[in-house]
Length: 224
Ligand code: DC
Image (tube, rainbow, N blue to C red; front, side, top):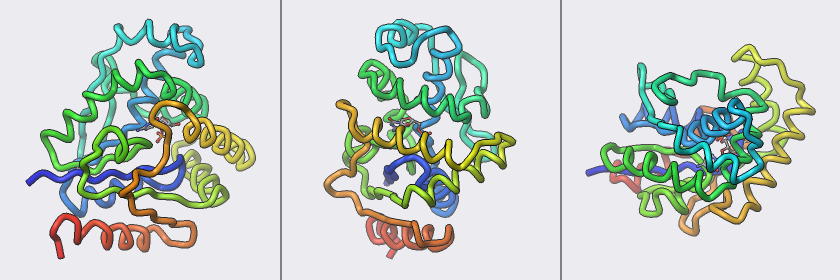
């Protein structure tokens, strides 16, 4: 039996840390779908395209071959044969990712990459439209949310750990702008699926969040 678990929600809610921990616990493959949009945004920007311009970005898609690789359980995106590493994690890359994610051709381009992985493996996939568009039949759908302040503080810490200095104010402003763009776009907006379970972790520690998610998941995949 193959299982699909979708974790959607706004940026900085802690989807990736949660999904990684759950994947390890369940022995599923963790798929970070944001990394795919980040890679396209990065490629387009570094090839001189304006990432807000659908035609310019769409014209480059034919040059892009993407796949996901796993080293010691950690996902890396392979872009035209080379690992992109952390180049896709900067604040600029975040905005380019959000920009290209509004473009229908980009979403179509990434659809199969995401579905193919879920066909061959039990997955826990994090993104914005996993429960609504990519894996509408997922056995478990969690919509993870937390307050803006909590999310901005976490993101600053996360960037610092990667050696990227960013101010709380800049990160917060960037997050509010990106959230609005992601939630209000016409195509695949970042909204919860009707059958998603909401989990707010503003006041929870990481371990408590993992336990809360396990309590949602376990009965749905026959673990209890
Ligand atoms: O999860 P993230 O911050 O790495 O995602 C980067 C951007 O990609 C985010 O602003 C919205 C977009 N995205 C999306 O539209 N659909 C997904 N499934 C994942 C990410």
